[in-house]
Image (cartoon, rainbow, N blue to C red; front, side, top):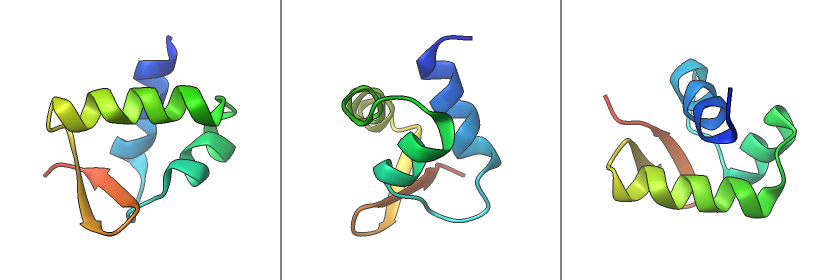
Length: 59
């Protein structure tokens, strides 16, 4: 599974909004790579931000 899929699955399984740092720590993926993947997910409108710096899968 590539990093994009790992991050997407992490968001799908997260029970609460998470920060990019939490995603990087939990998945073991470099923070810069997580930031790039999250930017792509934001552009695709797959994740939304309920509060500043925290993200969750769009329901």
